[in-house]
Length: 231
Image (cartoon, rainbow, N blue to C red; front, side, top):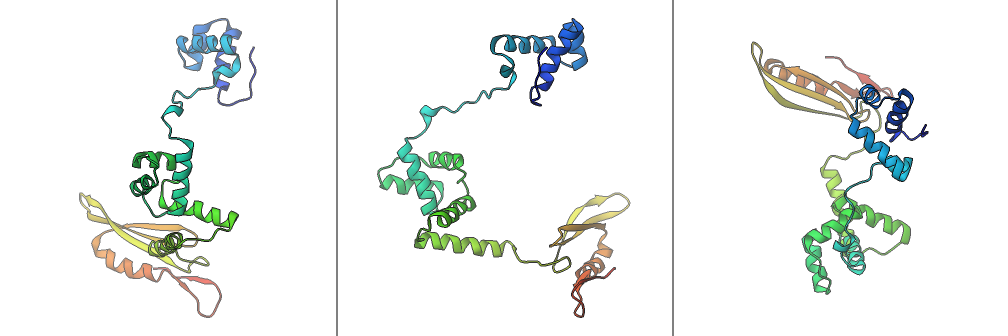
């Protein structure tokens, strides 16, 4: 009788134990919903390598021969932090000028392994390096950080202090239904609590609902709390 507390292989061990207890492989496989081939594969694995052999082994193993030299990889990582706004092809071209030959796809592969594939992740790595090592930023790095701040503002990242402080709403076309006509969905989201209030409406009610939802939440001028206005 095999024993394990690991959830990953518990069902495999259970099949082997059940077959041993019943003395019937076919019946055990039928009860567990597995095939006889599966049972014998599990049994053979345990006989050859013990219970640890029941863990799944990934068939995709990294081919280290295909990886670039450690010196080149370190240079690619260093370049990503020094010039976070540059893409993979520009990084490849600039490194070639330094005598380090790596393709654009090679640069991206290295960045993916070290979680540097996007502009945001490279900026995050730069901020972490500044916090730990206290390095002096170059003009390129300062420009990249300022660009991130601008992008955050442009994407609507704003401060909201309590429920009702700020709401967001949008309308989009859902489709045309037989006997009903065109249907739109109007969605209002409280930006602090992230509670969404969707409503499917027809065009005649759309304008009136837009006006109502703009005044759905407002901040009381006399009390330090949010007042709710129904429509």
